Image 1 (cartoon, one colour):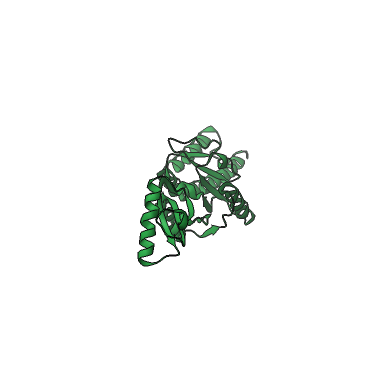
Image 2 (cartoon, one colour):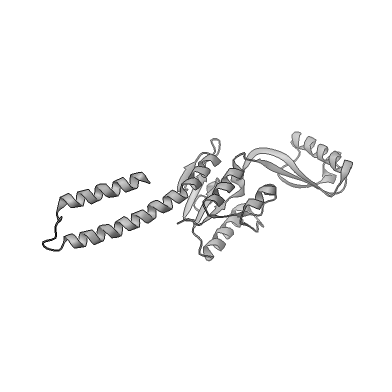
Length: 231
Protein backbone atom coordinates (compact mmCIF):
# COMPACT_ATOMS: atom_id res chain seq x y z
CA UNK A 1 0.00 0.00 0.00
CA UNK A 2 1.28 3.46 -0.93
CA UNK A 3 2.40 5.38 2.15
CA UNK A 4 4.54 8.10 0.54
CA UNK A 5 3.92 10.47 -2.37
CA UNK A 6 6.97 11.94 -4.10
CA UNK A 7 6.08 14.90 -6.31
CA UNK A 8 8.28 16.22 -9.09
CA UNK A 9 8.08 19.97 -8.36
CA UNK A 10 7.88 20.76 -12.08
CA UNK A 11 4.33 19.36 -12.31
CA UNK A 12 3.16 21.98 -9.78
CA UNK A 13 3.93 24.87 -12.14
CA UNK A 14 2.44 26.32 -15.30
CA UNK A 15 4.45 27.51 -18.31
CA UNK A 16 3.95 31.17 -17.37
CA UNK A 17 6.90 32.93 -15.69
CA UNK A 18 6.87 35.65 -13.06
CA UNK A 19 9.30 37.48 -10.76
CA UNK A 20 8.84 35.90 -7.34
CA UNK A 21 11.63 37.38 -5.19
CA UNK A 22 13.97 40.38 -5.04
CA UNK A 23 16.82 39.85 -2.58
CA UNK A 24 19.32 42.34 -1.20
CA UNK A 25 17.27 45.55 -1.47
CA UNK A 26 14.64 47.30 0.63
CA UNK A 27 12.00 50.01 0.22
CA UNK A 28 11.92 52.06 -2.94
CA UNK A 29 15.07 50.39 -4.28
CA UNK A 30 13.38 47.01 -4.04
CA UNK A 31 10.22 48.26 -5.77
CA UNK A 32 12.29 49.80 -8.58
CA UNK A 33 14.27 46.57 -9.02
CA UNK A 34 11.04 44.56 -9.10
CA UNK A 35 9.58 46.69 -11.89
CA UNK A 36 12.84 46.50 -13.84
CA UNK A 37 12.92 42.71 -13.50
CA UNK A 38 9.30 42.42 -14.65
CA UNK A 39 10.07 44.58 -17.68
CA UNK A 40 13.11 42.45 -18.54
CA UNK A 41 11.00 39.31 -18.20
CA UNK A 42 8.34 40.74 -20.51
CA UNK A 43 11.08 41.53 -23.04
CA UNK A 44 12.28 37.92 -22.94
CA UNK A 45 15.60 38.73 -21.27
CA UNK A 46 15.16 36.47 -18.22
CA UNK A 47 14.80 32.73 -17.79
CA UNK A 48 13.81 30.72 -14.69
CA UNK A 49 16.36 30.99 -11.88
CA UNK A 50 18.36 33.60 -9.98
CA UNK A 51 19.64 36.66 -11.83
CA UNK A 52 22.09 39.28 -10.47
CA UNK A 53 20.39 42.68 -10.44
CA UNK A 54 23.43 44.32 -12.07
CA UNK A 55 22.65 42.26 -15.20
CA UNK A 56 19.05 43.56 -15.38
CA UNK A 57 18.67 47.02 -16.99
CA UNK A 58 17.52 49.58 -14.43
CA UNK A 59 17.41 47.15 -11.48
CA UNK A 60 20.42 48.38 -9.53
CA UNK A 61 23.78 46.90 -8.72
CA UNK A 62 23.18 44.79 -5.63
CA UNK A 63 21.09 41.68 -4.96
CA UNK A 64 19.31 39.09 -7.07
CA UNK A 65 15.95 38.51 -8.73
CA UNK A 66 14.29 35.09 -8.74
CA UNK A 67 12.21 34.17 -11.78
CA UNK A 68 9.92 31.17 -11.35
CA UNK A 69 6.98 29.57 -13.15
CA UNK A 70 3.56 30.39 -11.73
CA UNK A 71 2.08 27.65 -9.58
CA UNK A 72 -0.78 25.61 -10.98
CA UNK A 73 -4.07 26.65 -9.33
CA UNK A 74 -4.60 23.03 -8.19
CA UNK A 75 -1.13 22.61 -6.63
CA UNK A 76 -2.32 23.41 -3.10
CA UNK A 77 -5.30 21.07 -3.48
CA UNK A 78 -3.02 18.18 -4.45
CA UNK A 79 -0.75 18.71 -1.44
CA UNK A 80 -3.75 19.03 0.89
CA UNK A 81 -5.37 15.85 -0.44
CA UNK A 82 -2.16 13.85 -0.04
CA UNK A 83 -2.03 14.89 3.61
CA UNK A 84 -5.75 14.14 4.10
CA UNK A 85 -5.37 10.52 2.98
CA UNK A 86 -2.52 10.03 5.44
CA UNK A 87 0.35 9.74 2.97
CA UNK A 88 3.75 11.24 3.68
CA UNK A 89 4.33 13.90 1.02
CA UNK A 90 7.83 14.65 -0.25
CA UNK A 91 9.40 16.81 -2.95
CA UNK A 92 12.63 18.64 -3.71
CA UNK A 93 13.69 21.84 -1.99
CA UNK A 94 12.75 24.06 -4.93
CA UNK A 95 12.72 27.86 -4.38
CA UNK A 96 9.63 28.23 -6.57
CA UNK A 97 7.50 26.32 -4.05
CA UNK A 98 7.68 29.25 -1.62
CA UNK A 99 4.80 29.00 0.92
CA UNK A 100 3.54 25.76 -0.66
CA UNK A 101 6.68 24.07 0.68
CA UNK A 102 5.23 24.27 4.19
CA UNK A 103 2.61 21.69 3.20
CA UNK A 104 5.22 18.98 2.56
CA UNK A 105 6.49 16.60 5.20
CA UNK A 106 9.97 16.75 3.72
CA UNK A 107 11.84 18.68 1.04
CA UNK A 108 14.96 16.83 -0.04
CA UNK A 109 18.19 18.38 -1.31
CA UNK A 110 17.96 19.38 -4.97
CA UNK A 111 21.59 19.86 -6.08
CA UNK A 112 22.32 19.23 -9.74
CA UNK A 113 19.84 18.31 -12.50
CA UNK A 114 16.28 17.80 -11.29
CA UNK A 115 16.01 14.28 -12.72
CA UNK A 116 19.14 13.18 -10.85
CA UNK A 117 17.89 14.76 -7.61
CA UNK A 118 14.56 12.93 -7.97
CA UNK A 119 16.31 9.61 -8.51
CA UNK A 120 18.35 10.19 -5.35
CA UNK A 121 15.19 11.14 -3.46
CA UNK A 122 13.43 7.97 -4.62
CA UNK A 123 16.41 5.84 -3.58
CA UNK A 124 16.46 7.54 -0.16
CA UNK A 125 12.75 6.85 0.39
CA UNK A 126 13.15 3.19 -0.62
CA UNK A 127 16.10 2.83 1.74
CA UNK A 128 13.70 3.92 4.51
CA UNK A 129 11.24 1.20 3.50
CA UNK A 130 8.66 3.52 1.94
CA UNK A 131 6.13 2.43 -0.68
CA UNK A 132 6.16 5.33 -3.12
CA UNK A 133 3.74 6.84 -5.60
CA UNK A 134 5.80 9.14 -7.84
CA UNK A 135 4.08 12.01 -9.67
CA UNK A 136 5.97 13.41 -12.67
CA UNK A 137 5.47 14.83 -16.11
CA UNK A 138 9.01 14.19 -17.34
CA UNK A 139 9.40 11.54 -20.03
CA UNK A 140 12.82 10.49 -18.73
CA UNK A 141 11.44 9.96 -15.21
CA UNK A 142 8.31 7.97 -16.17
CA UNK A 143 10.24 4.68 -15.87
CA UNK A 144 11.55 5.51 -12.38
CA UNK A 145 11.73 2.63 -9.93
CA UNK A 146 8.65 3.59 -7.91
CA UNK A 147 5.79 1.30 -6.92
CA UNK A 148 3.36 3.53 -8.86
CA UNK A 149 4.32 6.24 -11.37
CA UNK A 150 1.60 8.79 -12.13
CA UNK A 151 2.40 10.53 -15.41
CA UNK A 152 0.99 14.03 -15.92
CA UNK A 153 0.57 14.31 -19.69
CA UNK A 154 0.09 17.89 -20.84
CA UNK A 155 -1.53 18.21 -24.26
CA UNK A 156 1.41 19.94 -25.97
CA UNK A 157 4.16 17.83 -24.38
CA UNK A 158 5.51 14.33 -25.13
CA UNK A 159 3.64 11.63 -23.17
CA UNK A 160 5.52 10.21 -20.17
CA UNK A 161 5.71 6.70 -21.63
CA UNK A 162 6.37 4.10 -18.98
CA UNK A 163 4.10 5.62 -16.34
CA UNK A 164 1.60 3.27 -14.71
CA UNK A 165 -1.19 5.87 -14.81
CA UNK A 166 -1.74 8.77 -17.20
CA UNK A 167 -3.60 11.91 -16.06
CA UNK A 168 -4.11 15.13 -18.04
CA UNK A 169 -3.51 17.60 -15.20
CA UNK A 170 -3.28 18.02 -11.44
CA UNK A 171 -7.02 17.39 -11.20
CA UNK A 172 -6.28 13.81 -12.24
CA UNK A 173 -3.54 13.59 -9.61
CA UNK A 174 -6.04 14.79 -6.98
CA UNK A 175 -8.51 12.05 -8.02
CA UNK A 176 -5.75 9.42 -7.81
CA UNK A 177 -4.85 10.54 -4.28
CA UNK A 178 -8.51 10.73 -3.28
CA UNK A 179 -8.95 7.07 -4.30
CA UNK A 180 -6.01 5.74 -2.26
CA UNK A 181 -8.02 4.94 0.92
CA UNK A 182 -10.66 3.08 -1.12
CA UNK A 183 -7.93 1.16 -2.96
CA UNK A 184 -6.40 0.16 0.38
CA UNK A 185 -9.79 -1.04 1.64
CA UNK A 186 -10.37 -3.00 -1.57
CA UNK A 187 -6.95 -4.65 -1.28
CA UNK A 188 -7.63 -5.67 2.32
CA UNK A 189 -11.06 -7.02 1.38
CA UNK A 190 -9.49 -8.94 -1.48
CA UNK A 191 -7.05 -10.63 0.89
CA UNK A 192 -9.86 -11.49 3.28
CA UNK A 193 -12.02 -12.94 0.48
CA UNK A 194 -9.08 -14.91 -0.88
CA UNK A 195 -8.37 -16.46 2.52
CA UNK A 196 -12.06 -17.17 3.08
CA UNK A 197 -12.40 -18.76 -0.34
CA UNK A 198 -9.41 -21.02 0.31
CA UNK A 199 -10.85 -22.16 3.63
CA UNK A 200 -14.29 -22.81 2.15
CA UNK A 201 -12.75 -24.67 -0.78
CA UNK A 202 -10.78 -26.89 1.58
CA UNK A 203 -13.91 -27.67 3.64
CA UNK A 204 -15.92 -28.50 0.53
CA UNK A 205 -13.36 -31.15 -0.39
CA UNK A 206 -14.32 -33.07 2.73
CA UNK A 207 -16.80 -35.89 2.13
CA UNK A 208 -20.43 -35.54 3.29
CA UNK A 209 -20.14 -31.76 3.85
CA UNK A 210 -23.51 -30.06 3.38
CA UNK A 211 -23.45 -27.40 0.65
CA UNK A 212 -20.62 -28.90 -1.39
CA UNK A 213 -20.99 -28.56 -5.13
CA UNK A 214 -21.05 -25.85 -7.83
CA UNK A 215 -24.10 -23.99 -6.45
CA UNK A 216 -22.35 -22.94 -3.27
CA UNK A 217 -19.22 -21.97 -5.22
CA UNK A 218 -21.27 -19.76 -7.53
CA UNK A 219 -23.01 -18.17 -4.55
CA UNK A 220 -19.66 -17.35 -2.93
CA UNK A 221 -18.45 -15.77 -6.19
CA UNK A 222 -21.57 -13.60 -6.41
CA UNK A 223 -21.05 -12.49 -2.81
CA UNK A 224 -17.45 -11.50 -3.57
CA UNK A 225 -18.53 -9.52 -6.64
CA UNK A 226 -21.21 -7.69 -4.64
CA UNK A 227 -18.69 -6.78 -1.94
CA UNK A 228 -16.31 -5.40 -4.55
CA UNK A 229 -19.11 -3.42 -6.22
CA UNK A 230 -20.08 -1.80 -2.92
CA UNK A 231 -16.49 -0.54 -2.45
